Image (cartoon, rainbow, N blue to C red; front, side, top):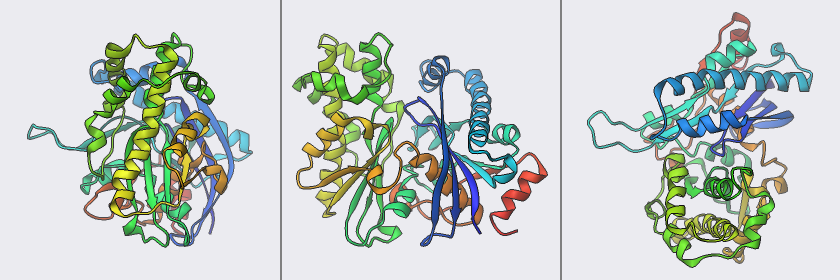
Length: 399
């Protein structure tokens, strides 16, 4: 039986919501997925500003977090309904929605206090989405992995394993969103041989620097134009290379709480005198190095050969960044998801549809070898607010 599902993704770049309608059939080992339609819903400037504010400990507050949880639920619901209209489908055609939510805090380690546990928080309430769409919703994936001792990330490592396993080539599948993460898929690799970790910042630092040097008129370095015209400053590069995260052994994960606006504050405090284009060129070079140095330290340096790097996410559209990554990996093929028939824009949203599908089928949908969990788990929680949405969800399991 094939099912229709909608995957939703809101990433750490805080640019908007990706929604994709997919058809899925089969099970692990013979899973088939095809994209039927897609749509993007941009955040307004006010929404983006507020999401960044409540993701920063110094400026956040409980009321705003709780309110935005509901506001985003409605926003996600609108994204689903717009996609349905665009595709010509109705809610009655869709078996389920699967939502990543929006991460505003992620702490994969225990703190010093006796009550300070590992924790994570994604907002965009799934009951609000379900009520707005009359479709059952799967969401809140990370918590199950963390309950099993994992880092709750990178979750897309399981998707990379499904989509990019190859009998002849060992691949590093690199996502460059707000944060960068890699999934290492060895040729003929089993699920317990897959390695994955966050390499460090993806677009996050570049975007924030561009936002500041452009007087808040630009949110990213389109086509790498700023960076290409700038010069790399060795002092700033050395300063950023001292960051302790880069030395931590995998499995590991990071986020805006480490490389967000406060990190960029430190750059401007010490190096704000540099030319704007030189700043962008240097943080772009550093981002490329955090990726390639991670491979050399934690993959190639551990006797894991890499034949090919496949890059997705927003960073895959920055040709300067791709050139710098390829420069630092001589002899290794560097390409993008589109070379393999998958859209970089849609891959993560499609991936969460697959995670939701596995959840509803009652099948494992994470890789302990990638997240550091003690054992395999089924990630995801389910909400349905109407009997007919419940019935369509049950049909995924053949009930």
